[in-house]
Length: 449
Image 1 (cartoon, rainbow, N blue to C red):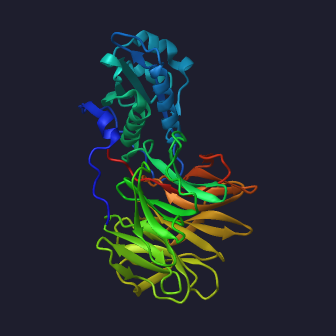
Image 2 (image 1 turned 180 degrees about the vertical axis):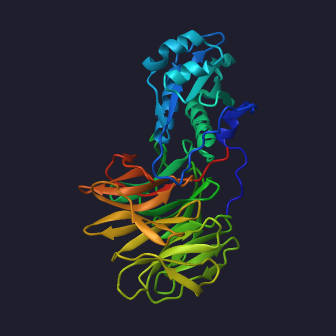
Image 3 (image 1 turned 135 degrees about the horizontal axis):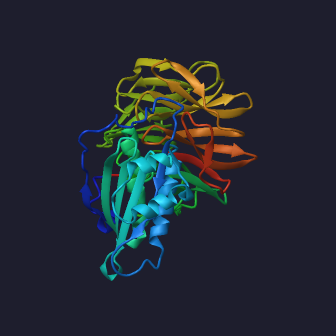
């Protein structure tokens, strides 16, 4: 029933890393720069990105070098880890060093750079694509940090640059960046809701479904190859699975009544979901052999399951507190109601949409605060919740980035619903969609191809 690994996708066919080089530097002059992601405030690394240098025969008539540089700059700015030096600050130094790989560390430090990126590129024969060679230098510690060479077809320029940007973030934080990740959401059209996919930086918007009906709650598989959601296309809320490109589709589960709120277990062996087969919304596990295991047995509504990263627990929404208001609870992923169930949300009459962080130490959820909804984050170590400041309007339906640094959510302002992104510890939000009819965002995991 559950999918096996797709063999060779079109990205794998067109894109490959031809050569990766990395030289550890002996006798470093200082400690390696590494950000502590647990700190909310952190000075950004001052970064200089020189112009991409065209090498070899032919000419860059498409302006690939300039476009690639723009993509890289945006990726690193959106990471909120870097402060880019403007080119006039280091233009003369760039000209003095020429096109070689040598770096005058002292001079770069004098103009305010902490890290420097230099890039060369060339066209492949017969217009088959480009070869990009990226080099990253640590000016503070006077060392070459990282080199990557990529070959790619013209259509995958963005992917190549995203991948290197993620490598740069990895060098700084110890965690891979998220430039290559994607976000699914529901777009409302003429009373219907279809599943869409968009890149982290807001490019490559793609419509994945054309069901001409109401779809609900899209969720990624842990390997990033599949998206599962609820669809009314067959006049019943059935559980549907499509591949990440929207080209392959199959019905996962169809029982009379609700088949909803799917959440894939980290090992991809089970899906937690909500069924109304018992005349009430209860949480079940759908296993690979199509066997159902009931987890909750309560006369109140139980819904919105989300897995802990280790697969041992499930957070969910229930109004079992007796107040007639939904709250967030945690239960054992195998024992369900027969084990210990712990309530974690307090101080609000309405809490829903829990989402467990990739590191396992936090749960984000929707919380009513006064007359609007906001995103709360519960810390499982301190056992305290904190409201994120997301500005005007109501914020709901949070989903974590795979590095645990960002949250994506739906935001309502003046009857318009759009998708926004907020960094934990950050002061602002970034708008991702602009249709005014976007709902239920879900952040992809890391992709391996």
